[in-house]
Length: 99
Length: 418
Image (cartoon, rainbow over all chains, first blue to last red; front, side, top):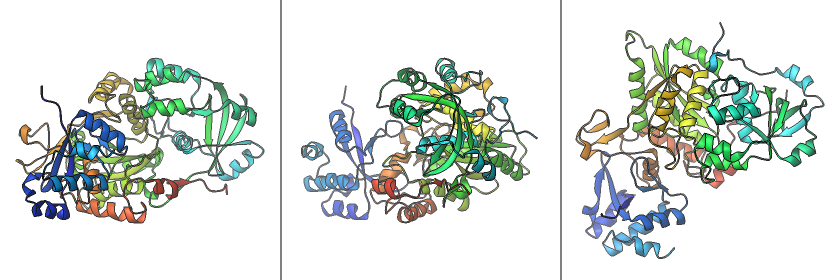
C-alpha cells in the first residue's frame, strides 16, 4: 500500500509566481479555489510529525483538507526557495535536516 | 409575560442595582477571580446559563458525570465550577455559610453565597465530559488545572460589565435578545456558533440553515433570522483576534450578503472546552436561553483533534431531543466545485472527483502567505476588514500573538462600583 502523503500548500502570490516562472517551474502550480495558485510540497508521516513538532503553530487539518497548514510565512519562504533552487518539490528531507 | 428558558424555568437576571450593592458588600471578604470565572459569572447572572443560579455543588457534578443532568434532573453537560486552593480557603478564612465578594480587575463584580466546599475527582470529570483523560485534550488540561477544592453557591452580579469598543453592540443578554427577535418579527431563529472570521463556506452554512429553518413558513414577510453567536473567551496564539471575528461576522450583513431582516450578530463570553458532543449540548442549552428556536450543527461540532467522530454531536443531540427546547439543524459541508463554478453543498453537487474543500484553517494559511483569496471563497469586504483590524487592534496581525495577549484592550471591564 502506498505511503500516505500530506501536502504543505504554498499559496503562490505574484512574487512567488515570478520566481517560479524565472526557473521554468510555473507549470508546477495547481489552480484551486476559483483562481488561486498553489504549489504542493508533500510530506510523509514522519516528516509531518517532525514539522508539527518543530513548528508548534502549524496544524494538521485532519477534519477537512488533510493538509499541513499555518506554517509561518518565513518557513514557507524557505521551503519555496529550496524548491526553486533544486527545481524539484522533493525538498523536505533537506529542509528538515536543519532542524 | 415570563420568558422561559432551558429546563422550563423562567429566565431571571441575578443582578443587584449599585445603591443596594454598595451596602451589601460592605465588610465582606474579597476574592479576586480570573477571566474564566468572570465570564461564567456573567453567564450565570444574565441568564445565559439558566436555570443555573450559581456555581455548581457536588450533587450537580455527580449528575452531570453520571447522567448528563443536574441534581434536579435538568439536562446539562458541562460543569460550571468555582475553584480555590486549600491555602486560599485557609488564608481567606472561608467556610460554608459565608458571603464573599468576587472582584475582577480590582473592582467588585459579584456576591457569592458559599453553600458547599468539596472535592471531585478530576479524571472522572474528564472521562465523563471529554471522553478522555489525556491532558493534551484542552478541556482535560483545564480540568486538571483547577485548584484543590470547588465551591458551590449562588451568584448575584453587583456591578454590570462595561463592554469595550468595538464589542458594545454585540453583547445582547437573553432577556434583551428575546425582545429583539420580537421587534424583528422573527418566529424562528437559527443559531450559528462561531469563533472565526467567516469565509463563504460559513456564509453558505448560515444560508443553508436559514433555508432549512424556514421550512413551510409563509414567505410574504421575513419570519426567520440567523443569529451569529460568537464565543468570546480564552484565546490561543494563531486564533483570529476577537475584534476581527465579531466585526467581520457583522460585515456580512453590512455588506449585503445578509440583511437586517434576516441576520444579527452577538457574542457570549465562554472559554471553549472542546468537548465535542457534550459541548454541542451545552451550546443548545445556551442558545435556548437566548431565545432561539433552532441551532445549526456541522461536522465535528466543538471538537478538537480526532477525539470525536464527525457526527458524534448529532447522535448525542438526537438522543436528548425531548429534553431540548431547541431544534437541531444538521448542516452538510459546503465546498468549491470548479465544474459548477460555485460554492455548493456536498449534498447537492455530484462532481465528487472535482470537489475542492476549504476550511478556516486553509483560509488563514492563504492570508498568512500574503495572498488575497478570491471573492467566491472569501468576501473582499471581509478581507479588507480583517486587514484593517490587524492594524487597528492586532498590532499588525489579524491573528493572536504574544503582543496581542499582553496589550489588547479587554472585551469588558469591571469599573469601580459607582
